[in-house]
Picture 1: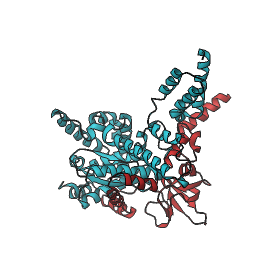
Picture 2: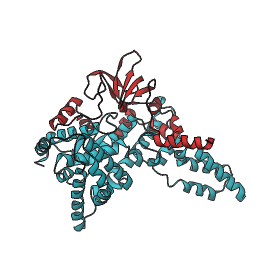
Picture 3: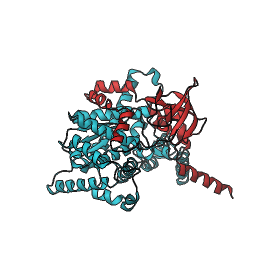
Picture 4: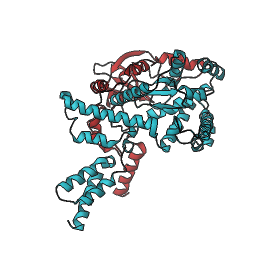
Length: 321
Length: 164
């Protein structure tokens, strides 16, 4: 194949990829490259180059945003359930109904003040019986916070800041963004979803395999890999807005991040392996630096809440922890 | 004004507004939550007049901030929060979202179709996972009235409401 011909094929592939939309690049180039190679239109080297062109597009975060999720609300919910089941199989929930009820009332109230108050099922919160300092959310609205994280808070608005940050991850569908597209694409290439109304046992088996992979990708992001710094910044920014909308002090997030930073520093001094949030989040001090503190000062809470009443019920639910 | 400039403006407009669907009166939409609550007024705590299942088709008649007045096929009307409804193409995954910038390949959308109760049941049979704990957790969903009371305790109000 001549160089000119190869250029023509590459250009054609690029145009085709563009025509299918930016997101269509993911998988489409490799697919076209392999077809081109099979038909003898391009050689192996060119096919490899084209394949490499899409390696930067490995997760759904490139195509998922709040407005165009490839998953229906129902599917987000089912992925969320299996992620939640994985977490709840690994770690026991606390047996403290008053605490769990308080965290749910607080969290669900904050969710109402978010941009996405209603999900397929809704937001529910569970407290994990772990000393690790951590919190995370599934795409289905299941939000987890550890006893260790709650112990680090000193007031209702600080606890609210942590929960609002997790709600922000759900609102922005960050969990789904961690799914590696290639797996889903490969499932499609095998044509396994063509006629699910008449699903065969083999097809069900295959779809279940993809479902398991999808779940594993999200769990991996939540407990091991973490999201990008930009994603965490976005969640912090949204959390601050939610706090202000209810009437909580937006600076609560700064106070709790400072305490997290000290806890992390102490952990590192002991040369401990990063655990909990340390493994998956940027340094808390860096997150504080990213918050526009001057803007935070201008962010007036919409109403003045009764701080004494908030303190009383916080102490009642969390005090003995 | 040149044609290319007009096209540029159009593109900028698309990016600025994003692919988020803009609701307008007359739009046909579907319920996007498991149990959509139809209310007598555009407020979180207004009386629930009817519960609507996932995927039920309704028509938008009026928008007030985050609330839409909808009419059912049998003529029943009521208010619902706009995050409880979605355009049909987001619900049945026909892959028609590709006209928006940065959207979804149809293939991925189709792939998602497989994740349902049947698949969860199969997944559960293959893995020893504690779904009972998930069911218990999902039972923590509090009625909106309780959330209203929780806010009242600290003299706060439910946000996102408009006067009816």
